[in-house]
Figure 1 (cartoon, rainbow, N blue to C red):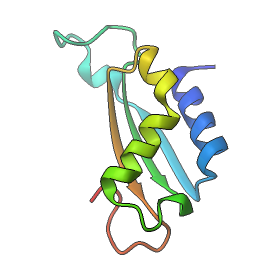
Figure 2 (cartoon, one colour; figure 1 turned 90 degrees about the horizontal axis):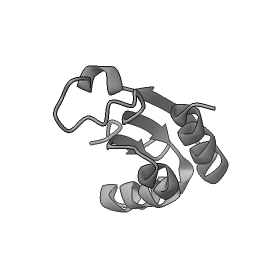
Figure 3 (spheres, one colour; figure 1 turned 60 degrees about the vertical axis):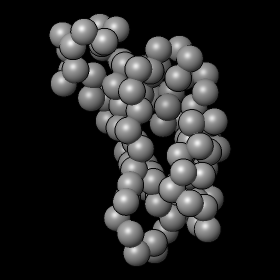
Length: 94
């Protein structure tokens, strides 16, 4: 299972999201001095989940970081989050 698949599986299991997209953006960072050159280091997560309702954006992100703590320790260098609750008027990540 790829790291992107692990991230998706863990988020699905913990948050049962209505919408979830996990993008591996590592190729766009290839050659950067800080890139670990693993091919699985930079990810973007777009997620809509009821669990985010009434949480601030910071609280939503902390929740996701907590769920993905193991993956973050295992080599994720960058994680961009776009989070929202269903029917939230704001766009994901705003």
